[in-house]
Length: 264
Image (cartoon, rainbow, N blue to C red; front, side):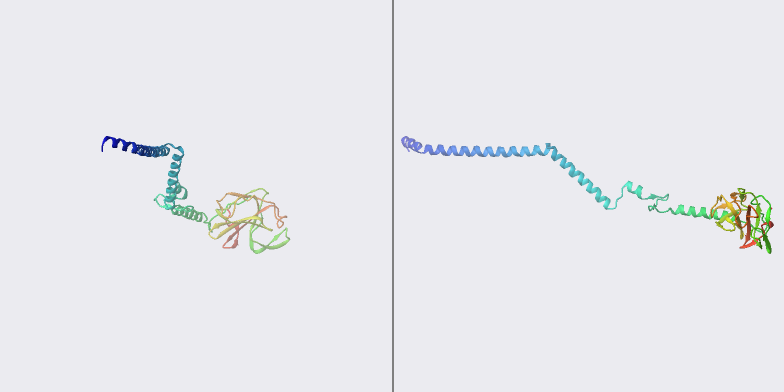
């Protein structure tokens, strides 16, 4: 192709080539811009993940929830913590665990031993017998004697009948002492004796003290000999004429015996 023809071809095709070149350039620019924007977007997301405080708080809360869940699972699996052991049970000296509210067998044994020792000592102290002596439970003169073989005159009742006890005359308020070691088996009252106390002296012997007030013992109380446990009251309607007196009865296996035979 000679120069004239080439020049003419370029003139004819030049506009088309220029248009294509411009389109290619625009396409390249567009692609570059889009790639740049995509890169910038990724950078912004990354910095957001690292610096956004809200996201950091969410991460910490998730961690705490996970830890709480793990702790709950451990407790559900039967792994007690130290507080639970301290609050729900105690450990005995041998290392065995004793249930809450239970009684330590060693303590139970000790208590039983102590109780047995007390019972033995009490039985040894309550050893009254036919050779033993009573101390006077109150000071005063006898206004009525014991007599179960013949009848005795009762001035207030104005009648004769047997007398299963002795009456020791004294003033109201006089201190009443136990005549021997005794354990109280009854504290009660009735019309004839008023307030009275019955004591077991041992050996089948019982003593009854009647017409009392200010009684300082209860059933089950152990009362050593010579102990003040009450005072003398005014006489009941059965003994008004006889005047204030201590009703004192002694029995052996339930049968009245004369207290005078045992008094010192």
